[in-house]
Length: 176
Picture (cartoon, rainbow, N blue to C red):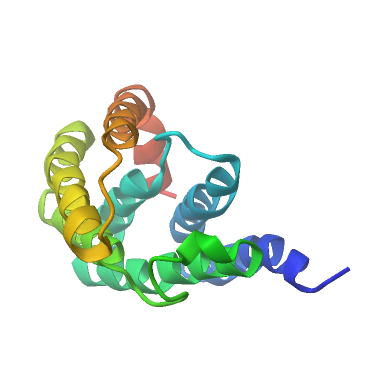
């Protein structure tokens, strides 16, 4: 068996163990991001994404700086690993280098901390109101591709449903 086929599952195991040293909350957030960036991506997510809620959880739980730097380290790493399997996965940007999307997600994590006295639903609405218009600008001006409006609309709907129905689960994750 070629070693590259072991990298993806090992990234989940080692990431969970590594971040587990900093607390179960961080390990669970890493697992959510891994599921989003690796498994859902390979399956074709059709607007289903867990990155936004993960950014809110990490920002609220660990603060603005930890949230921002966690994003800049973990997201490029996981997305760069995909390039081992599918080189076209990161054809728009060099592997393992933070993208403007990662900076945006880091900003969302930072924003969540400043809004931590609000309900998770309010924080999500504000995050989505910033994230997806900014994503369309990044798509158009930095990456040079037309924005996928249908995928973005599905992601907004999915995230709002996620927070409305699973808010208690996310609050429990933050208290692990």
